[in-house]
Length: 137
Image 1 (cartoon, rainbow, N blue to C red):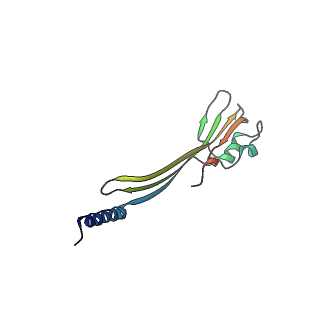
Image 2: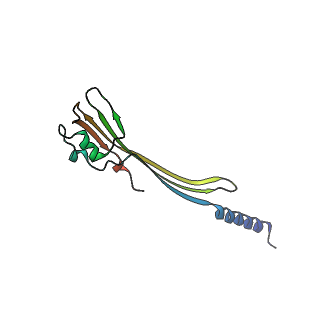
Image 3: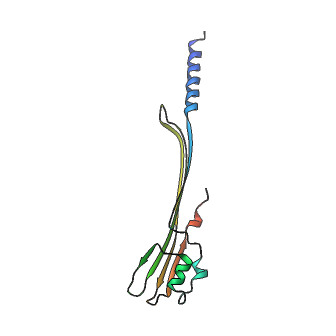
């Protein structure tokens, strides 16, 4: 039989082998989309002083929100995207120790706000496209 030092060494190796077998590596990717994507660029489709509410509805669909104003309505279109990635290396059975964790959460929004006059013709609009800044992974 081996010496006391050899038995401790074997015990440590056995413990490391058991821990490495039950060590779990998990990877999660999440995507959240809220609202309808604004597919058309308003610069190409909307003409101030000429485009009507019905044309806007045909181009962009129903708005996320309509605000009534005394001098005309406001259509608000919002499209929200959230991408998340998580990589975890842990031992969940005996020690519940997390050895390594990487998380990245990105969230961006596209917004289109269209102001109409009393006759239902576009008076002005504002557009911001933030979802193009998201990385694909």
